[in-house]
Image (cartoon, rainbow, N blue to C red; front, top):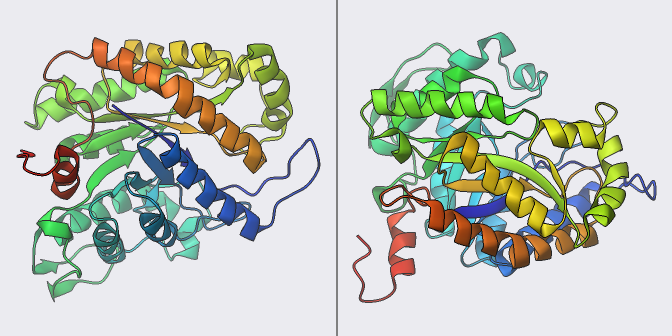
Length: 365
């Protein structure tokens, strides 16, 4: 099973000091966080895509391309890439290029985003969000798999004899996750193509997450891709960890109360009860995360949000030490023991990555 972190890249004042980092500081901190993720043994680093304050990650492939040169093992991903407002031709070429830079250590999560004004900024209509996601991915899927594409749709100009360059590394496109919090149409899209489905369940009760994952698994089987437990599922989550649970709650409370995403709403206790947010000791995070399996079955990727709401870089790095040193090793062991034979343990890696992991002289297949 894969474990990692994702960032939304918010630039938020630290409520305990009143200081707001500069955009430059936040970007550099993101690099340090990603490199720390590899250092502590995590598998995945994923960045969001935003084009509005108070967020900075407007160019995910720039960030991930830099990290490709600074890391050796980490899977570089997104959380999410905006399939609705990015041109699918540009996505096809950017991520194929990134594949080559990272020797295959790349996948991506496609989504519609959560910021309404971004649509007109890029010449689109939010009321067409779902049709845009469906049409644009249909084109992206072909661009990575066909050398020459003739295409005509509703939302962009036609293509005649077009070849996206560079071609995917060794002819194998990046693995795609379709990310959604609330849209069954996106679960259906993931199932139709046999791609992964990622439910970022940081805002919703597990009962909702359970329904979305069940729909995806059922439709995955309907479309002939395998049994429901063969479907590739990822979950988001959020944790704040200290050796002592009381210290964790005390330290995290001012950040929670002022967070731009969910501050000034339910109390920390209410939110933790109603959603997967876990603020406490390593053992509490382990037990809560293992409980996700009870809701959705065996799944393949768990990403944690660790660096938002103004948390200083020093605190985030301490969080990653606890996550990588105590939480993830226990989760790996427990999830592996529970996983039935034949159920995928991770999303399929690129063949170049699988060959390296298999070692010299070993048939990775």
